[in-house]
Length: 596
Ligand SMILES: *[C@@H]1O[C@H](CO)[C@@H](O)[C@H](O)[C@H]1NC(C)=O
Ligand SMILES: *[C@@H]1O[C@H](CO)[C@@H](O)[C@H](O)[C@H]1NC(C)=O
Ligand SMILES: *[C@@H]1O[C@H](CO)[C@@H](O)[C@H](O)[C@H]1NC(C)=O
Ligand SMILES: *[C@@H]1O[C@H](CO)[C@@H](O)[C@H](O)[C@H]1NC(C)=O
Ligand SMILES: *[C@@H]1O[C@H](CO)[C@@H](O)[C@H](O)[C@H]1NC(C)=O
Ligand SMILES: *[C@@H]1O[C@H](CO)[C@@H](O)[C@H](O)[C@H]1NC(C)=O
Ligand SMILES: *[C@@H]1O[C@H](CO)[C@@H](O)[C@H](O)[C@H]1NC(C)=O
Ligand SMILES: *[C@@H]1O[C@H](CO)[C@@H](O)[C@H](O)[C@H]1NC(C)=O
Image 1 (tube, rainbow, N blue to C red):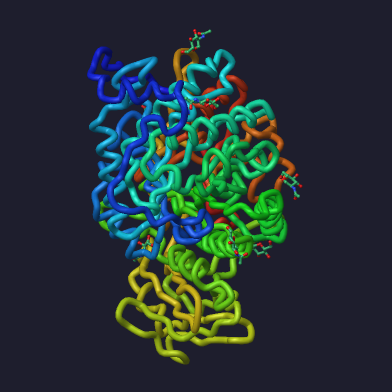
Image 2: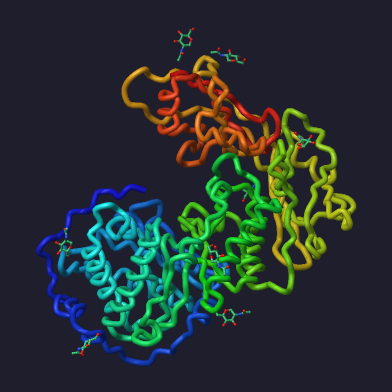
């Protein structure tokens, strides 16, 4: 992301309140410490990390650029934390961007007291509900604290970073031990020197919060390595030398995990997850960082597989495996939720109840019950993708549905019942079960009621209850291939010869699932338009592009992003875009050629 324009700073605004104490940086630690009433119940870092499991991120909210409410979420309401609590979360990570809330510039860098108060109030909303929480400095990492830009003034960045954390430290000095601090989110870094600089930032952060006083000297901190990346942290992170002597803070390490990139971000047609290679890569990643920090409490402060970008059976398999692996390595996890991913903050509904149930059962249920899971394609050489998260019926095949058999991994559980709304399906009549084969067959007696009038789209979800672990859902879905709606039934689009290009909208009438699976872009000369190396991937991935950066969708169709359209002009070759839909089977796509 490129930094956006900074809001004009309020020069000459009141900076006096903190002026004297901020200068304490140049004196010795604790020189201006806040004194707190009451008592502080110290927590070890391992207890803190354990107690906040599982955790949830209030994403895209107080971290929005430039202000709370500026991105896709309104200002946070207390009710949102009730929703997180009801869902079973124990910890809240509270990302905060401070960059646009400074009232003065160097040397004081006074933070707007109203913003400090807002953060303090939100922290109270969280702790009053019994959560453990982590407060951080978030997008500042790339807005002004990026030590990797060529002309970075490291002295100035360090100074501002100290002043900021000193003020946060003063404001939050008397918060209880359930409030931890995190110095900075995903600090950029590509070299060992950047890693060493981040180690210094951890020290400056410790000095600042200790100088601020209050309970901060006993407060848990979750320190960070470059990028909060597991490999760079393993290679370059060094605990501050004076941690344990000069600074007594209990400390954990935080890192983030969004891997494999292609599955998590819907790149290159990777809509499956769970092959032996997928599993061993994930296990290796987490095992290596644990092997580097055998005695340090480890917190995975961000991770996700969002319903926006992933297929349900693959997502549930990923949730189950990732969370079991993290648990087996004694790591706690904090789910990222940008407001469009999991919790619908307006309706208080969780968009994927099964994923949440898997999360609860895996975090709390290790050593007891595995989760049953739908069987789905995981083979990277597959030519189509099956998924027992759906009972798919292709509409053009007519009303005669017939029995449909879906395979599962029961993982040691037995199926107890199947429900549709308030109705419990009758075994033998509505469905049959083959416990040895781990298959469920939905019979015509049940299915025909859904399909008699030739419908399209999701017709209902049945809920599978097992003897242990999470419940599963099967989405009964009638589908057909969407229709291309270009004027005059055209299948091609001509780009303007000159001038700026823009996103190209390809109008579609959806038919079933109102979204694409992926988009393949093949040039008339046989090369792939972008990432030609994908020719070495499996049949479901070759030539496929990346969601969000290269394609997107809305209620009326699919969008080819400007970057891709520009690539067509640059290549100067007619390119066929094949928009592929779920289920990913032969022919379930439409093709549009774009002529430059
Ligand atoms: C401040 O700390 C330094 C070492 O960090 C020490 O040499 C010096 O005596 C201290 N000054 C005061 C006034 O405590
Ligand atoms: C870097 O920042 C420091 C502290 O603000 C300042 O004194 C110094 O002049 C700056 N250096 C450059 C090269 O701008
Ligand atoms: C520490 O992590 C690095 C980077 O992932 C890895 O190469 C190394 O093998 C790990 N160390 C141990 C002891 O596993
Ligand atoms: C998990 O790690 C903590 C330190 O973070 C340690 O106290 C605890 O004993 C570990 N538990 C297991 C089961 O290894
Ligand atoms: C899916 O692919 C498998 C082999 O990969 C093939 O046997 C099967 O017929 C295909 N099914 C459909 C519906 O294309
Ligand atoms: C079935 O569940 C999916 C996923 O939650 C949802 O999008 C769909 O609308 C549901 N179908 C019906 C008919 O409620
Ligand atoms: C559609 O076809 C008609 C008749 O051939 C033509 O006049 C019109 O310009 C075409 N419209 C578009 C948008 O191509
Ligand atoms: C588009 O195709 C449909 C179906 O083939 C046909 O009924 C319709 O007349 C066509 N419209 C135009 C504008 O050519």
